[in-house]
Length: 367
Ligand code: HEM
Image (cartoon, rainbow, N blue to C red):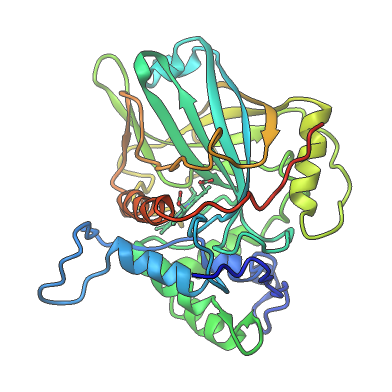
């Protein structure tokens, strides 16, 4: 199949009669690709005997159909990205909450990937396109902790079904190259959880650069300590002494160019903050809802990134940042998105694994 690498989305932030606070987020089709499937019982099998049920394959098909072109070899979401590497300095504070080896004091190597949401690897950077950060921590005894986070404080969908439906509702209309404002408006009006999440997200402007962005786990997880006690948690990465924003770089790769400049000037550091939820009170199965701001928050260590490279087989191009690859001591919560994400990332990974790999969308030149 011929690749259409030259395709560029023309979608801008002007998406019509959506209230301003929502418009800030809706940076284009990228947003459409932010989420997908759900269902108390997300279907892993592909059998369709009886009533229609959503599968991982359906969701990846929908992401492909709405990507604004055909992009074999690339991730079916968060296609545009760049590889980074560094380490996690664990300060030991997390050991009180979880027996995971990641929380034993020490330094653990990690690989990562910054990305923009959407299935088009050549989409121009826009400040409002949701930004992703995937991390793969290499822990003692061959364990790993993989996570994929976003720079928004809540997610737009509570279930995979909503992700699937919204992906279509927010997709570019081929006639205009932009999402259809009326369709989006109708969708938001009929999905109060999405409307509420957009209102929360719209309260703050996106940080100017990757280096100044906070990244959120969004989904809840469970930490188990050495005595078998379990607490619900979410986490976020807060920039620590971020470099002054590099000033708005120009061009289609402005955010990624700024990241290269910032990271080459000094290693970039984020504090890993674990928020401890109140069991039975704070929702663990609905990523569209915030937890109260006063929840106990524990600084468990610092992520330091000191290398940046074009994606390739030598770094994270062929990694699946499946959020369910977890060390002993960290488990999934009852959030249906987690099972859905794991299945969908796997399907996306399977497809791209069998396709010829293009050169990374963001080319990092030798320093
Ligand atoms: C049901 C909801 C979701 C669906 C269906 C979905 C789908 C996908 C897919 C297909 C990929 C590409 C996977 C690959 O080929 O490796 C991806 C990547 C990603 N997703 Fe999601 N996603 C969902 C929710 C979320 C949420 C809640 C977050 C953040 C907490 C998130 C953050 C990311 C990030 C950061 C990446 C890029 C990882 C990388 O660099 O490889 N996604 N998503």
